Image 1 (cartoon, rainbow, N blue to C red):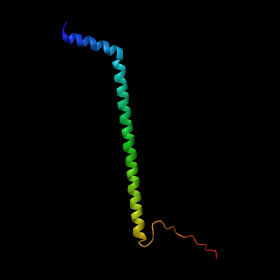
Image 2: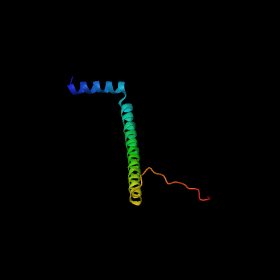
Image 3: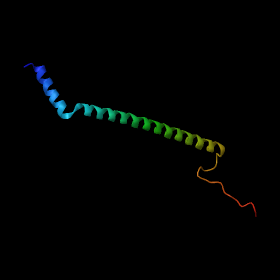
Length: 82
């Protein structure tokens, strides 16, 4: 018996037992899921980065407008009817 024929017959038996088509299909589904998850993570991280940059620019513009006021100070509402 040829050694390659022996290994091929063993491989065929293992393939029928484990149903490699089902395994390959599951691997393909997992790859697609991983790709979709990575795309969604990339989009959300870009959105957070844009949000942080706009917040930083907003804070910087407040500092330029009011150089001696604290950033946490809120404007006082005074009653104009008195």
